[in-house]
Image (spheres, rainbow, N blue to C red):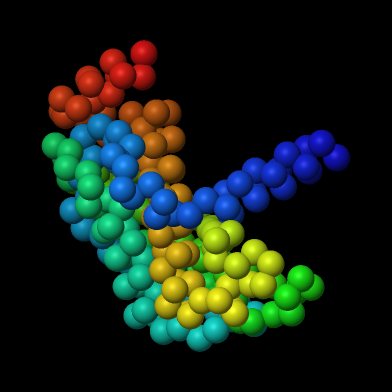
Length: 192
């Protein structure tokens, strides 16, 4: 029971975080990382049950824009590329307040390419699933308070933040972006 409760609390914490809340702050250090190509597609995107309609072009553009907004802050010494595929989504419709307040969801597959090494860092795509932030309407539901475009923007920003978190973890564990940049030495000293 304790394990279930801790998973639930962790999930609620992640849902509560707004993906754009930290964009005004300095970027989380990522060594020599610089995003050059940010490609988002949605040819196989599946619309979930009770979802508002959105075009595949809108899905791809929203994800690409949010990724550019977050990763345009990095200016490392080596070039990296993202291939992102929207696999599924739900943009919540209005529900019944306090009884049924559906949440929006976005599922994205991510591939990271290292230009200098001329290879994929993710042999198989890394899947990311994000939910809308609590500020989107936890009680009433964002279907009542937000347009489909606003819901999609929030989901895309949350996805970009989740991608950044994943890259930070991979950099710590695998040293993905610890190449030729002098920023890496500064980061190592700062972490000690």
